[in-house]
Amino acid sequence: MGTDVLVIGGGNAALCAALMAAEAGASVLLLEAAPRELRGGNSAHTRNLRCMHDAPQDVLVDAYPEEEYWQDLLKVTGGRTSEPLARLVIRASSTCRGWMQRHGVRFQPPLSGALHVARTNAFFMGGGKALVNAYFRSAERLGVRIRYQAPVQRIELQDGRFVAAWVGDERITAKACVLAAGGFESNREWLREAWGRNERGEWPADNFLIRGTRFNQGTLLRHLIEEHRADAIGDPTQAHMVAIDARAPLYDGGICTRIDCVSLSVVVNREARRFYDEGEDFWPKRYAIWGRLVAQQPGQTAWSVIDAKAVGRFMPPVFPGVVAHSLPELARRLGLDETAFMQTLNDYNRACRRDHAGHFDHTVLDDCRTEGLAPVKSHWARPIDTAPFYGYALRPGVTFTYLGLRTDETAAVRFGGQPSANLFVAGEMMAGNVLGQGYTAGVGMSIGTAFGRIAGTRAAAAAAAARGREVQHALA
Image 1 (spheres, rainbow, N blue to C red):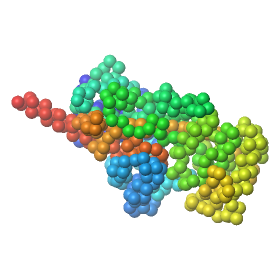
Image 2 (image 1 turned 90 degrees about the horizontal axis):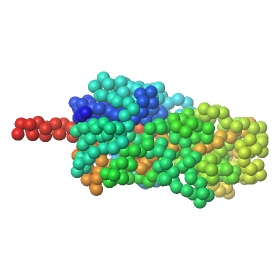
Image 3 (image 1 turned 30 degrees about the vertical axis):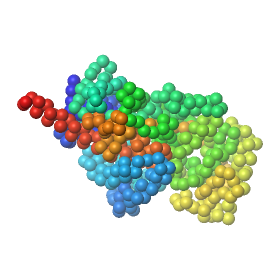
């Protein structure tokens, strides 16, 4: 079985690659590991795309220029990013929406409570599931052949060039290939290996939950790195990792399991101690650090505690919190040491600048902060003193891992520093080139869209060149 371009994966990046290759005139075969009803990878759980724009545009209010986007990315990654590739993604995010709309994607203004991103992020009408459904429909109209339940275990290479992929005992050849099969976040053994055992004797990864698809096992990623010696990039413990409701399912909990009241709350660990500044920055720039913070706590569990004043100021969790009419009662209901809990809450309440309490404004970096408390709460610090009180148990929720294949502006997979002529990579399998750590809302879809489109275009060109060589050989 052969084709011009083989696309391995079924999420946003894979579909962008397939569409671009088909539009360029290539015959395309897309292999999706999941069954049809679970297609789309983690993209099915997304909601929005972070977009650069110099002026208000349809659903995007005000401007979000390149430099501000870059500074936001630089801040959350702590400098662990490739500026040329990051700026490529940022610029591409400003021009892709028209193309997306031509393939059936529709946008809508953000819903209330959606991370204060009306200026920076374009939301998909119907969410990520609607986006991938639109792309699959468009791909089928363009003649892209799609096979479900077709996980690729290995590929054949010759001198860094793609030759064939194997699905079970079936060998599939192609003139070019795009790898877009996601990270390894659903591979529990690999997560355990990466995170190891901590000083408390715990295996932290055993308590991780996976927010997205169960099909991202990292099979091809490991195969490329270990058996084909592809150039890799990234730390295997770094990931888009969010503090989610501890009652979420092991897989596919999605966005609705996120607990968004952290910046309004006090967060304590199993010892009833605070461990980080809950009000460090706006929630869209900080929500993705809290999974990792919770992962470093005893039992990989924490609790976000609010009072009645916070209710209505954040997107409500899908599961109700534990409710109590006093803080000691809440401590008991959460299973926390009451004495330690009350010491923490009393210390926090005393440290809140009560003279600034009237200046509370969750839409700006206000001056409600603590004084003389470690760790500080920098903004939105108000005493937790108004019943009823609520507690939400948190666990680390992994969206996708950052260990991936090193690439460049051509999206080519590299071997020993040399780019492959016909093997390309997009999406989570290369996101670590831009995301060395940290995350900000919507950037994953920006990376997948930008590099998916590049990879598809390059793969189609590589296939066309291969066809040309075949014709010349036949005429010779």
